[in-house]
Structure formats: C-alpha cells, structure tokens
Image (tube, rainbow, N blue to C red; front, top):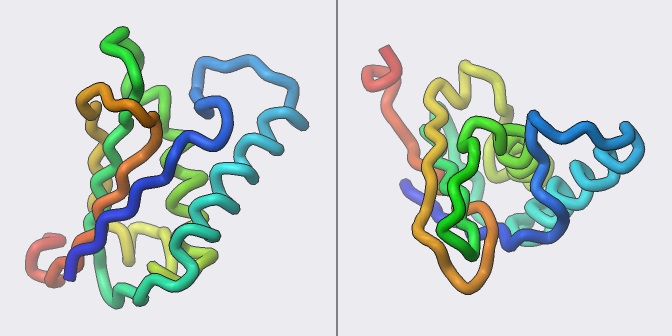
Amino acid sequence: MTTEIFIPRVAEWLTTNSRDHWALRYNRTQTWRRSTWALTKGTEAIQGPVKITATIIKTTRHRYDLDGHMPTVKACIDGLRDAGVITEDHTGVVPELTLRAGEPARRAGVLLRIESITTKETR
C-alpha cells in the first residue's frame, strides 16, 4: 500500500540552522504537526514497516540545505503518528526515511510518500 500526502507550508520552515527562541520554535513545530494531523486524520492506517520519502517543495529554484529541513519532516511524521496513519515512528516501524528536493511549484510544502514494505526489504 502506498499513500501520498501533501502538507502545504503552514508556517516558517523548521531548520537545523535557525536560531529562534525556543517558544517560537515550539509554536512552529506544533503548527506543522497539527496541520499534518488535521490533513491525515481520516486516512487509512498503514500497518507494519513503512518507507517514507519526504520531498521538500519550494516556490523558487534557490539552493538550500536539504538536510537542514529535517525538523520540518520530523514534525510532519509526528503528525502522521498522531493521526494514526502510522503506528509509531521508531526504526522498527520506519526503517527507511528518504529526503528529496522537489521541483519548484506554486505552493510550497512537504510531500510525504508512505509505502508498506516487507520485513525482507528492511534487512
């Protein structure tokens, strides 16, 4: 089973390079997490191990640190777990996580592709 979910940019990007006040960072994290939960709460649960591919989509072709966007992706994955789309987000359930840069689009956000995988694929 494969599910694709687009989470539009609902707040400033969370990046490892930002030096924001902890309260501001917390609020942005919760905004990404709750938005993901709200968009996915009716989605059918995916059982067993899954592979998640997170594609960062921006509106311009400017270069950026792709791995710096992991805090945004983490908040979105936590929202998937909160909504029950995945049972947990530890390595037993999500043994593979891929981060990709997407092509520029009119709407910025994160495209999450969640694929069921067999236990044989995880070894």
